[in-house]
Image (cartoon, rainbow, N blue to C red):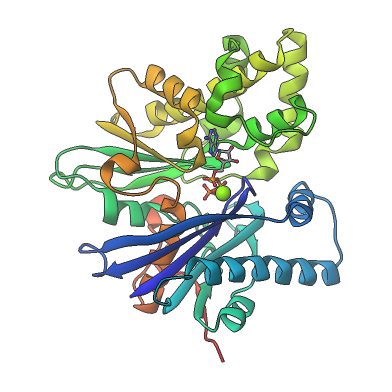
Length: 377
Ligand SMILES: Nc1ncnc2c1ncn2[C@@H]1O[C@H](COP(=O)(O)OP(=O)(O)OP(=O)(O)O)[C@@H](O)[C@H]1O
Ligand SMILES: [Mg+2]
């Protein structure tokens, strides 16, 4: 089946679109990436999404308009990615998360809101669309996140190596894949900030002229402050055992402000601040592995935009010692589009009524098919 996966994560940098050919079902799943492209949001829309994500209020009427504006952008991405290729039969659209609140009490369900409704995408693209992937897992008592580990298992498990697939988007998350020869539990959770704090800091420190630290070049000119890294790592989220998920609500602008205040006390330069935030991201990932994994992996495979941050990759490698840090590209899966590819696979599984979540990862009471199906009429 030819399927399009559409994803825009917590970085709010743009919509990643992947057109893939999918074969098989779960253990024999095979995918071929036909085309992958990122479609940046128009600046005004990006600002509006960022403001909503930082807690600014909007009326229900404004919410409806924003929902359709996002669906429109996702639809355009789906139409554009097919140019010059045979058309897709199905779209899996994650949508744009604007609010994510894990359950804080066993009797409470989590809440996760993605805008860009599937009905609009199906109507504009005239293609069956599956969206709202997190709702069924949350209804079953799960975090609704991370949803990609079962896809990682299907595409990246190794016969003799235990692997961590570490996505570094706005938030970092991992899939721990035991080697196939010794079947053990797949684990996964959100490790904490990925690029989110770095992007926010670059925006502030460059007075709005830059959105991210390309290749980590700016951070690489600074020195990190270990005192602050150690202090920030003491925060409850990093000690909380999985299942756990997080978002901009926790590691957004307010969090950065607190970091900048600490940095001022320590007299850090702009480059030092970026080096310290990069070190914090690397340290939070490695601390998470050391604290919650049954054993350290044989390999770490990075994906997501943060895998292109060479300085962050180097800091991860230093902290992981002799565990090689690679990217999923080196194992045949495009690191920039892996999350978009995953939502194509989750949609395909939904069409086949195959459960998409892993209860061990999300904490849900059951494995359930994920997503709501919208036909084109
Ligand atoms: N060359 C690069 N150097 C440093 N950072 C980069 C580079 N390319 C991308 N990035 C970072 O990656 C971010 C985008 O990553 P990505 O799209 O994977 O995150 P996301 O949208 O939050 O997705 P998801 O939630 O699916 O993980 C950018 O905001 C930027 O910080
Ligand atoms: Mg993105």
